Length: 180
Ligand SMILES: Nc1ncnc2c1ncn2[C@@H]1O[C@H](COP(=O)(O)OP(=O)(O)OP(=O)(O)O)[C@@H](O)[C@H]1O
Ligand SMILES: Nc1nc2c(c(=O)[nH]1)N[C@H]1C(S)=C(S)[C@@H](COP(=O)(O)O)O[C@H]1N2
View 1 (cartoon, rainbow, N blue to C red):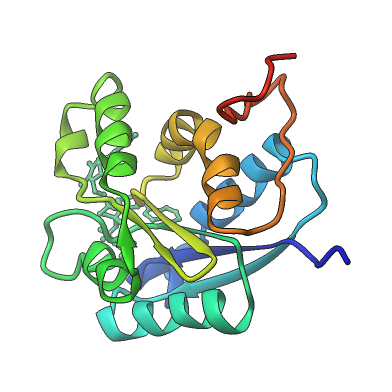
View 2 (cartoon, rainbow, N blue to C red):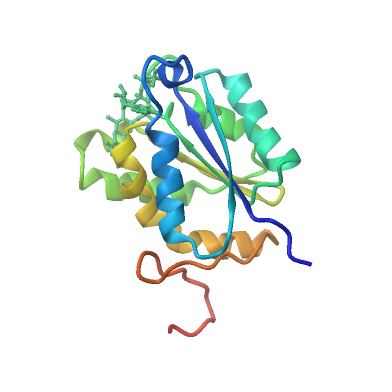
C-alpha cells in the first residue's frame, strides 16, 4: 500500500498571519520542494503568529494528525522577544537534530553576517522531521540547498515514505546506495 506523502509548510510571522504583508515564505518553500522532489506530494500549509503554544500545537497537528513526513517552518528563529519557533520545536520533538541548524548557519554565513542570529534547529517527532528556516524568504533556498541532500535518508530512517528527488536540483544521499 502506498500512502499519500504530505509535507507541512508553516509560516511563523505576526505580520503575514495578520495580513499586513503577503506571505512569501510559505510559497517559496512550496516552490522549492516542487522543483526538488519528483515523488508526488501534498502540501499542508499554515500561516500563524509568533506564539510558542500555537506553533507547538500546529507542529503536533501536522505531525500526529496530518501525518506529514516533513514539516518545514519559516520565521521566528532570531533573538527578538517574539522569536520562539526553536523553543516550540524543542517542545514537541523527541530527538533534536542539531546538525541541521549548524550546517544552515554555516552556509548562511557566506551570504550574510547576521546568519549567526538564527537559532534554527530541527528534530524528530514520531515519523516526522521538523526543520526550521529563517523568516527572510531568500533564506529558504540558501538553507534548503544545504540540508536537502540528507532529508530523504533521514525520512527513510524514521520509517517514512521514500522521497525521490530530481538529481538536477538535489542529489539525495543514501549511504550504501550507488551514485547514478
Ligand atoms: N512570511 C514572510 N513573507 C514575506 N516577507 C517576510 C516573511 N517573513 C519575514 N519576512 C521579511 O523578512 C524580515 C525578517 O523576518 P522576521 O521573521 O525577523 O520578521 P519579524 O520582524 O519577526 O516580523 P513578523 O513576525 O511580523 O514577520 C521581515 O521584516 C520581512 O521583511
Ligand atoms: N540564509 C540566510 N540566513 C539568515 C538570514 C538570511 O537572510 N539568509 N537572515 C538572518 C537574520 S537577519 C536573522 S535576524 C536570523 C533570524 O531570522 P528570523 O527571526 O526571521 O527567523 O536569520 C538569519 N539567517
